[in-house]
Image (cartoon, rainbow, N blue to C red; front, side, top):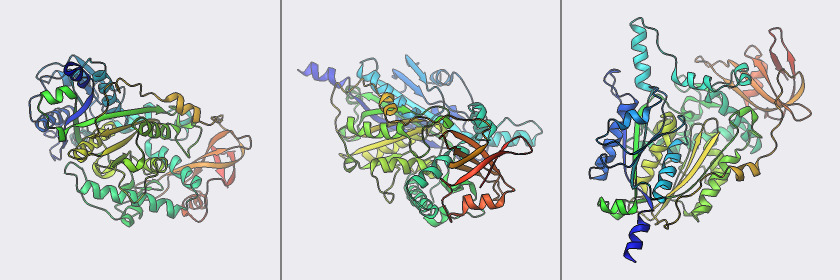
Length: 504
């Protein structure tokens, strides 16, 4: 009986340690690059564990990064460890769901009996990369291209390129403007909800010693466009978007329950890995069934709770991914979570910090801190791409039964069953239509660069058109809040340059 208990404990995954670093060194040459941040985070996690562990790892999982590209990043990092872990993996790309996938994969390996001790780690040093590029430019050397811009442009489809929908700030407003209309909110109501959620996140960050921005901000200061809080892309101000100009790294240590006890980890510091669920939308965001919902997010969130036998009332803490307000706004509606209640444990991507794909590693670290010594449960809803990838997981102080892992976290079939038919996408359509959603990027002087309209024709087919910046009346209509633009009629016509122009 004792032997059976030991064997079952060897198949139960738990989180036992964490390490975070925020590097603010003003010297670009002395500041850490991504690899250096990862090593510092791993060392901090070892200190948190209270015993040497980096020479005993069976598994190393690395979240990819874009600051200092290295296709063999996991191997490069592994060679810096005191001993080479037998299993070394890296996520396919730098994506917000990556840290949760790494933890879920490690939990499955523990459940299979293949590993007993592992580390999941990631970092971004875009601040260092930018400062080094500035120094190179000052010395007369050509700076490298923007890592974020290059990464976004590489994945853009021909249609997206044609209509200048390249970056997250171009794409997420399509969801924000569509959901506001679908939920029956006025512009003022939608902005107030965003500002309330973000203000609460700033207060969480203020209490987090590892957060990047630790000054609480009131809702009015978040919603109001000013010289210091300019509009980035309607209706998002600077304080509503992810802050990627950081140097941050984070690592968490995952172990079997029996290994945790061998290492002498006190019971009150052990956090159990619960069941998770993952699904995705079509990679081409213009081929989504709707911009007013994300079935992958809905499915992973509800499935993760169901698999762990939990309801919203059982959750002590949540982390609802927050690159832009629309993501936690969608998630909280599925969950039934009040806007007035914090939706983050680490401060979110604006205030806690937005190190590209590794943000949710910081959320996991803070969830561990918040759950230790309690009997609570926490839910993390991760998001990657353009609301493309969703992975939700429960972390809990309640012992998870042996036999839970390995677990197939892929719930794509369930998400597909909920999806509506995807409309045909037309190129260079001319004729009547109604606005489905829209995106308006702004320049640094507060002027709209253009508006990109996503519309439906009378047959329900989707097409795109442009409102040029010179059409001030149309831009004003789209941004004033006096009436809801989504659902209003207009016409797409060929202009002198050969593009397709939208007129009201």
